[in-house]
Length: 194
Image 1: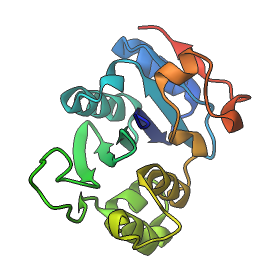
Image 2 (image 1 turned 90 degrees about the horizontal axis):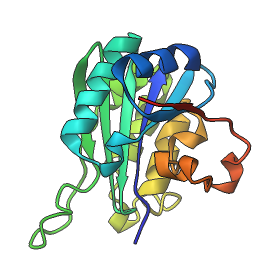
Image 3 (image 1 turned 180 degrees about the vertical axis):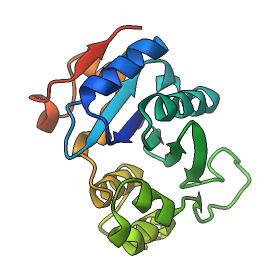
């Protein structure tokens, strides 16, 4: 079984404001330290990867914090989903392998993902071409050899968008169980109980 995780990365407000917003929303979550104006939220309820729950929470979080939010879900190491939320609205949705759940479909290209909107929301307008390349790459055909899988696609995207590396590969359960990847074991995640 591959890796599953769901994260929300917010641009602008610091961890203190994010924690206050999560408490007001009644969420149970962990919150990362703020790094270069980015704070990552690991929400317990969205770990089930229920899209309706992810979308509802992303909208509420972006409205409560008055800031853009990138929701991300990695499903079994095979599919990366991204949502862009701003001002209580969902602006974009990305699916790296839309045919994944159709056993009769041939693998095709990713769908969605607005590189210009992502780069603008996270203050990285100059990275649009690179973000676009990473979003469009067909990893099954090794179009970008340095990105062998969906985890690596997510890691490459967050790097280009200026986000901290713990926006990928970490989840609520891994923090709660104290088994985060070794490079993050000194990171202090704040617990919020809703």
